[in-house]
Length: 269
Image: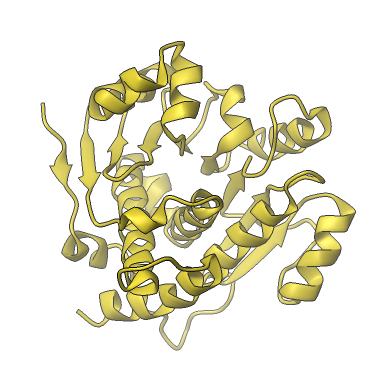
């Protein structure tokens, strides 16, 4: 079975503009447990990716020094506990960092829909509604196969991982494949090759997580929507990268700055 191409028009169906009766809670609250002393930037990038989508609130859980940097960069981020509609966990974490993994486990133990990235992929499979976001190297390690094998058959390996983990899998690449345990699969082929830089996956996790938080009630009613939500996040991320690139290299701040314009175009369709 071949993957169904997921388009800009498909993504537009998953985004909506807020209405006058909305507040920060109805627009979704995203919990972010990412970053570490070694990779603090991953937390900042993921939070920026989430905030740029128009999420109602971001609650951050991480090392004190990363929290301090976050406060300087994004004072609207909240650091206390409270309601969370979805989590982003693992970006900038190592599976060998026990403190980071404890934070990841604490977030994931709540059973809330979650994006599982980077180091926290080692915790899979987990119960609950999960979107796993590996690149080819991470998926190869998880499945115990050479990276080249995953790169030669990304669609098939995404489906295997989805079945093995019982999760929706977003296998990042020049074409990104989104696979489900029920063997549903989408592909997104909108990215620019200039997107292949460190930190882009951290931004993507924040974008997907924010859309999950904003559509929490629909996920609860029908978890099958999760694959389309993840694919929509990939579309937004890819289109923002193309705008940021304009045919050349770009900084991730530029990609993040383009996300609102991409979403504005989707909700205006």
